[in-house]
Length: 400
Image 1 (tube, helix red, strand yellow):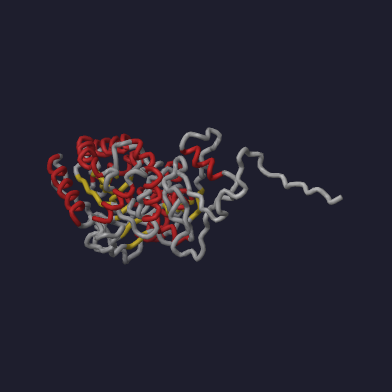
Image 2 (cartoon, rainbow, N blue to C red):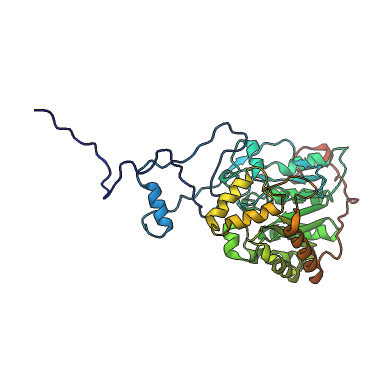
């Protein structure tokens, strides 16, 4: 008698189709709670990339069903922890020669930013580290524990010529990890010690922790702060910049800073067509009421990897208006998603961009903003006695 064949064990699923999908069918990434980017694509320097695929055992179907509230047993993607790596950089002041940027030097205490803003133009910089501008940018952070000591050394060099130091121009100096690491605070202490002027941009209420340093500097015309407020809608902020301070807290920070005598402005940036652009006037009004005297804005920029990351985010959270948003973005960039030309990359071109410029000008006039420009004083810079002779932290030396 011929032996009976025994079927291989398989899934006990009613109506199971042994080959429901191609084994090469890509599985779309999903939003993770507390993170801005949807996916973690390879960076522009990687020669290879990976794609998640459906193995045909129903997992993709379950996810689609869960999204339609039809599969209660399916779970959200697991949360991603933030990891910190020491950055052993040997210099701390970065130089800039871009003609459309109003500063020539800056300090970035961190690489990567836990705020997770989907539109952040700094995301592509993570590619230089061999990491993804997607989820890696907001979960794999590098910090510079020796920043204050390096800064003291660089400011003490005989050839150093003072000009305003910018902070928050790439990644946010007050992102959540700063609460414990205090790298930014240590930098400010050195700048105050040298009477070195500083301009800061942040979207985190944590900056109010350092009012004790910034207020005395402001009295000597050495400090100015801009708080970035992109929306007053807490839900939109939660999906667009998930780990930044809430809009209410940012407006509160403007109030606390201005009441402390620190010149404070607001950046309503970026303006994203059909997402937050309708809020421009409301943002400026709320900031002015809180004490902001200056204001600025930019149009959404999508250089390099940010374009695909933003489009993926847009189709996840605003699928019904994605095409309209992208169409408007292209109208500000000569038919492309991005144009790096220095003459227009911040504000765009075309009818839509011109409308934003007009609205901004009318709103700032109405709320009496930008009536004067606060000038920081570079003439007070001095090297403290002994600073040029030591590579050690002055806080340590002061103990002896």
